[in-house]
Structures are given as C-alpha cells and as structure tokens.
Image 1: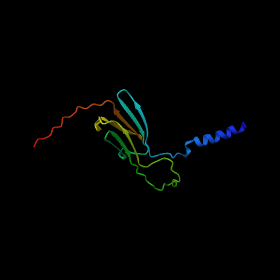
Image 2: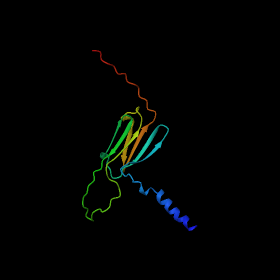
Image 3: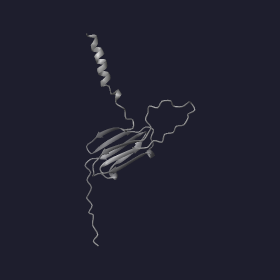
Image 4: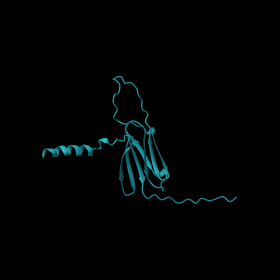
Length: 134
C-alpha cells in the first residue's frame, strides 16, 4: 500500500493548487512600505505612460486608474498569436483617511513604476466657515 501514498499526494496537490482559481490581471500589483512618517507605495505599470495615469481622492479613498492605449497593428515580423501580458485598463483604491488633501500626497512615475508617498498623521488647521446673515 506504500505506492498509493504518492498517488494520494498527487491528487491532494492537484486540488489544493490554485489552478482553478481565475487569475486577475487587471489589478495593479503594489508594494507598500511603512516608515515612521509615511507610507510608500510602488505600483508596477509597465507599458503605460504618465499621461495614462490618473489619481484622485474621494471620501477618504485614493483612487488610481491607468488607461491603456492598445494598438492592434500588424508588425513587419508577423502578428501576435498569444498575449500573456495584460495591457488593458486598471483601477485600484486605497483607504487613506479623511484628513488628507490632494496636496499632501506626492507621486512620481519613472520607467513603468508609479511611486506614491502618503504621509501619516496629517493634521490641518480647521478652517472657520462663516455663514452670511441676510
């Protein structure tokens, strides 16, 4: 019966594998690093240009969107018959809190990598908002 052990392992590994789980290629891959005073996000966006990327804050969430401008042109050396690298539109959001303003977040894009600095513990002076009396 010892020979069945390998057979059982084959099926256990087969069904434990995430082969049947669909892979999501349209999600931005992101590394987040925490320092004493900020978070640093590095997002890989190969093939995108700076003009293709937009970021905005809304209700405490930082939204990042990258639009692809895919061309289906015939190349001199032949046509592409299989494409494994995702080149479509992507979106991602991160909760950053209600205290941040757009001017607090710094971003740069270089060689296909979007780098974002999000400060911690931002406090803005509360502005007094006066109401006109008619």
